[in-house]
Image (cartoon, rainbow, N blue to C red; front, side, top):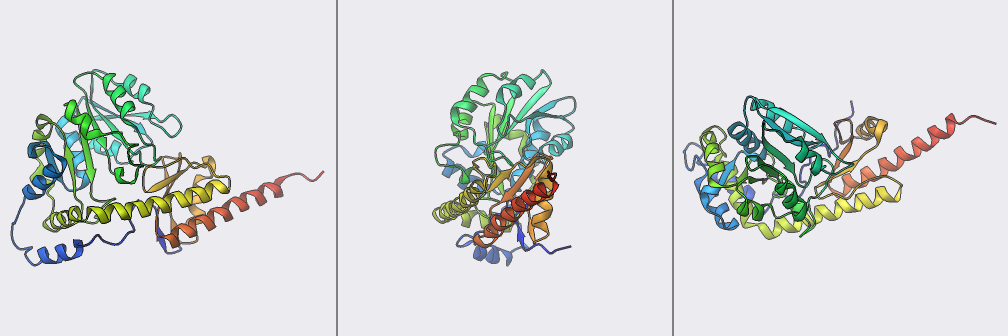
Length: 343
């Protein structure tokens, strides 16, 4: 087995740690024997202040995955259904089943959410609809009008949880203003993470914003989904470095788009992306492409048999992807020519 040289299968942010993060973690580590702020009250208040919402509308959690689980456990449950697009975040079906609810997967229309079909999939048993915006793995971005129209098509008792894990990598102004929707509609909740844009994947910290009536049931499980003391410290430092965070996200976006342009130039079908990754649908050659890159130390991931998600890495890693993709395309051409009959 070839060792992984460039890990591009996990949607990690390969930018340097934001200023102050390492120092904050080291400093608080010297007090790890103390309780300090067990329920992340200080972080919750800082987030609420930055977002301009009351603190009772914000729940800090151990990453967006933990918050998704808390939300589904609080608002779904046995005998209920949760509607989501597919392919989307791979953990959605597992998290739904962990809440003893039934996932209802609605196929994408090409690379996009089929919002009309998702609305049609809602039944009296539906309690939650999950929307990933930008969508992981296809990179699709839903705009404000699309989400507003979708909400208008749903019953008044169905909650909509918008997962914005990759929001900072989308084109400014293109992404729906989910917080504004949540302000006007108590059915809407928004979950975000520090893992991607702020580069705190290994520390697990995120937050959820919704009406107080929606966040209240989550607080009963917060002691079991705690934001660790080092993660709180890192999050405070990362928030203070917002300008640098946005500069680094812009660097990632430039690299992502450079790789896409290179793939398009070689005839590949690669849709625009609002995440820190690209979606490469190759049909029955998905796994062959994954294996070709893996044989040269580059890890990417096939998702749901539908395509290959290629994370954006360092310039060196991205150059390797482009070189290997060109080799893969050339190999296909030579293989096809070899199979043609001689006349």
